[in-house]
Length: 267
Length: 302
Image 1 (cartoon, rainbow over the protein chains, first blue to last red):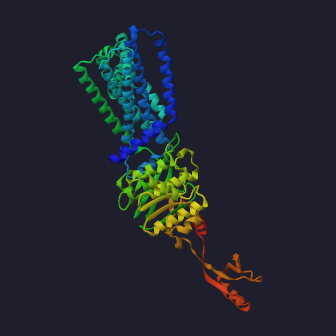
Image 2: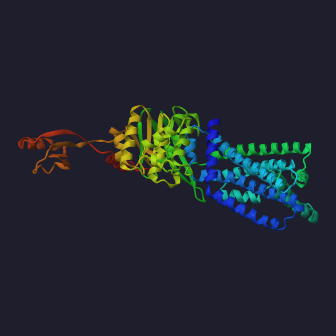
């Protein structure tokens, strides 16, 4: 099983490296990143370099998160669309192993990306004479865990739906949507009183908010670290909690995706 | 033994989810060591039947077993199974060499470079080893499919239109390999439209129409004996009787059929003209003749 897992992981990494859509997507993201960096470069002074460094790493981390989620999307949808999974499952390689290799390969690529981001930020930090802070490593790890949550969410959606539908759902039916909706409904209740449909809507929002994975787990409690890049002992514990949450979402996503994959027509 | 018992497969199609019967109470029995052909028109259910036998499609009703086990996707059962799909649905981002290595390694085989090279050379794919599959021709992809069928020591081979896209030389090579494997006891299940090809290699066959088996027997039984005529081969003569129906002639010999009741008349003619007779045998129809007559005889009621 381990051999099959590693074999499939290697093949998926090859897929990622050779996929032209992913390359185009990466170039697009790089272009957006470069455009957003222009004003920063123009207004560069030695006084604001810490905030510039924070902005650069934040931009790169966002890019890495979107890229990681797209790895699950492209890998699953491409193999389902090309119907080549029948070549895998008519050999002693169960769907569970193949699916695990999708997550593993994406997680590996994401980990490498976040390590590169952390190293790049450390390099810039040294070049700009900004003191190296442990918050840099903290932000990279936190970003990696968030990327795993997004990867899990998008991968399960891709196994269930057409990739375009999956992207639409990921963009518009996520925890942030229902968080915002909850506030809107609360406002409506305050203005009009608790009407039946508003009570039902509140309940529905609560249910969806509880079911959907948190795209930015414990965001309110990590804000301090992101602002100063100083990390206290309790923050590391919190990071472990975020990691645990990401693993939990990953496991649930894997179980659901496997269930769906087994029911898919692979012919 | 591969067995399909009362297997039905229904698909839902369109917005109104109209039910489409792909297989209708299909029964198949394939014995160990058989070279079994699934025959039928397009849409008869041959590929669907093969997908069910492989576990790629769950029957709506009925049961499929290979050596008494229900085929589960990716199970250990597949260690001794090889499958060649009809369409080249391979990992097209891999090169020819990488694809063969990957598929072989999935069986748990050690696929070192010399072994992969030897396999590719055997199929005349050596010079295309580094070519991405997406750039390969249909025939080359088919050879990759064949290569991955030959890496494990399969005891059962499922081949869906195996000769599709192959050049005549490759067809002959692969046919020889299959016959050799079958003689060594490997069970082969093959879908094909090429009846002449099937006739050369298969030992048993099932004819499918509208998802049902309309005939299932040994090939010699399927090629029915014609009780109304004899097949005769004799020395050619320009004044052969008109009731002798010529089929072919070569090197001063002629083959043809003669109605049973006129055989002695023909023999009298050969004696009178001192013509050599090579053979007189009961006339057997070709698989193609049988195929059409069976399909015509049993109109599907589906």
